[in-house]
Image (cartoon, rainbow, N blue to C red; front, top):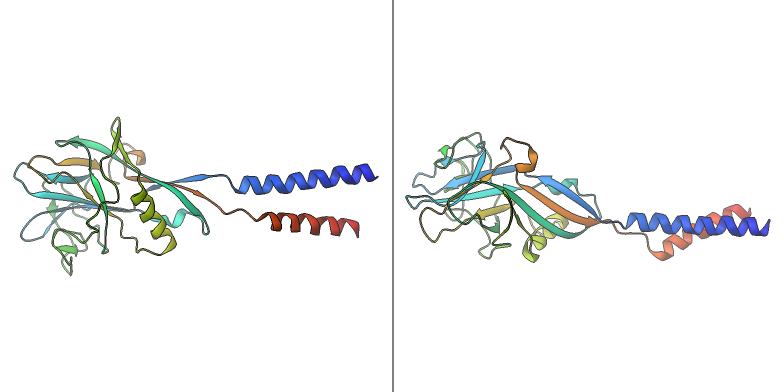
Amino acid sequence: MKMSMFGSTAALAAGVVAVVSSAASAQTASIVASRDNTIYQTTAGATSNGAGDGIFSGRNRGGTIRRGLVYFDLSVIPAGATITGATLQLSISQGQGTATASFHRALSNWGEGTSSGSGQGAAATPGDATWLFSFFNTTPWATPGGDFVPTPSATGGTANGIFVQWSSAGLLSDVQGWYSGALSNFGWFIIGDESGNQTADRWGSREIGGGPEFAPTLFVNYVIPTPSAGVGLAMLGLTLARRRR
């Protein structure tokens, strides 16, 4: 009987350890953009591309600037998680430039309307982000061209076929801040090479055909905090006490 009880106790202890170890396993959330848009440098500030299948960044042949916007909803990440990594991925559908970009944390909320165009954009619809408006045509940006942190959260990009990925300490810090509520989540501006003409790149938007894997995607690595050793042992002690009764 004593051996049997010892064996049962050992098995139970092992089970507690197994549960704790399982809870500590790392997980990854693959989050497709909830909103994206392109703003176009125009005097009227009435051009956008909220529902188009491309996001544009850089300058066109005529020298006017295009800037992308992208937003990810982090609510799919469980409460109490610890964010350990973040990687942003875009698909490149047409490039005149170097297929690289920098990402700047947006400081104001912005909209995605029903405008649908290409490299030249289309007439903005109510709620679209444009060069002059975060929401056309009722809410202006504080600064024409958008409100964002001047220092980029990520730059460059690592190409893998038609996909380009960014991962950096700044990107991770943004995601951690958004998740914790320390920062307001308005997404990122996508800033291309604006140093010269004909540098614009076209990235796949969330409306792009071919499947969601070609849409802007944020991969977030996280872990759920495990119960402390004291909690695990307390659970074991409580169970054994009940068995002795």
